[in-house]
Length: 311
Image: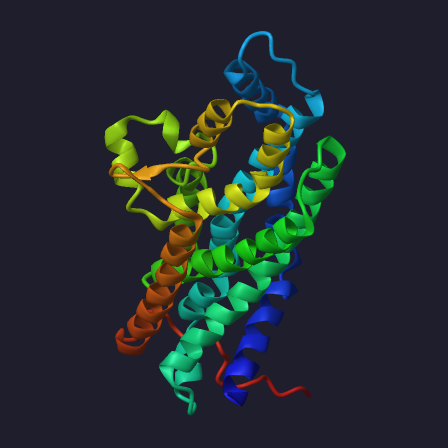
């Protein structure tokens, strides 16, 4: 346990030592929040107003609160995965520099070393994602706040759980990478594609039925839907108390993926949570097993064998 703690602490320090990497990882979610609120807010607002029956007046604050909840929940769903690929660079860097081989020559077991990389990446990603969550809550408070204390606590838990998922997925993929160029390429691909796959940029309900059925097998679909349910629950409750027809509220829930079906069967919030938890357990177990049985090859030690003698 002491070895695991020491290695985890060492990996965290190495990440924060690279200030450029840290600040760039920190700024990405904040920049995305600004871009989302600038370019996507009007698109979401138009889609919600079009779904409201004619002759039915709605307070703009309710619509703005609905838009804000969808925006920041989508942002957090993406950042929990994409940021994890950036924070996991220490593992690949150690392999490239040969530090991993040097560590394994000491009495350090492979599973312990693997867990240290995972825990360090998890800690760093959580720090960045909770900063993004704080900025998102401020944005929601300014635009339209309808969340209860319980909703906020559930969202905090969602970010923790989804960060575990994103870190585990990035750890499994990065376990096969050997250079910084490879992890940069993979991070770019994930950043470009994941938002569409998980339904953050565009709700899955807008896709064809065939693609919807395929995406229902991906845990990312359930993680995005879960955080949307917790972020938007208060708004839907306010809409119901304001006299919105149940059919309209149900239609909006389906349009933003808060409510969807798995081959004709409604998926409950509890089922979504179980899918994500089971996926995290399986991914972490697979990552530890891969690192434990994967043969060590590639990478040369960059540690100097001797130091110059000063005269």
